[in-house]
Length: 271
Image (tube, rainbow, N blue to C red; front, side):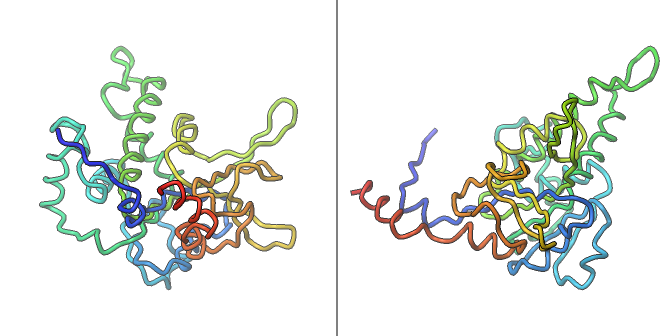
């Protein structure tokens, strides 16, 4: 196998897509963020909830079952060369889907997935129906096996989107508070199973919480160290702790060139 070294100049010329999740409470306006994106966008709608953006001019695909979600991830992300031909997301899986679905996904720069919370519910419902998750003697669901399959399915599905190099992948999800025995409140992504929520910050570049400030204005919380302890992470290093709740402008800021001093330091290291 021949390996290719990617130089700094080649890497800087390539525009990498942003992989992000935006979490927030009910009615915060997460779906309405679609209206702020300028690039061609495809919304993957798990919630049948585009009423708030019915005047939005973009394209959408409605997903109602987990097999549909897997097939669409395979079509958009392409085949995974590490898999056997009989596995989901393999080259054979992709080729069979592509033959039946001649859709040009290259026309979309942004894939907006609404929402990850509902996607995990669909996945868990499917997992509970699989033969390996049914107890033979009682025909009841083996909950432990179902949650194990859920973790495997969700991480494989997220991996498909993570490895799309040239598209922005935006997940949205519900945020819920939890109170421990010491009455301390923490914030968590609402989803089925713990594995997905635990692994997500390591998979995605950006974790953003959408909330409101003291004046009732919607804002993004973008850094891990924030006063309220909201889930947040900024791998780009370009975002402030708080940013205006405008997804289009946020994506532009993440992609902006490095500040002049950082460019000088980078140039000095190369020379």
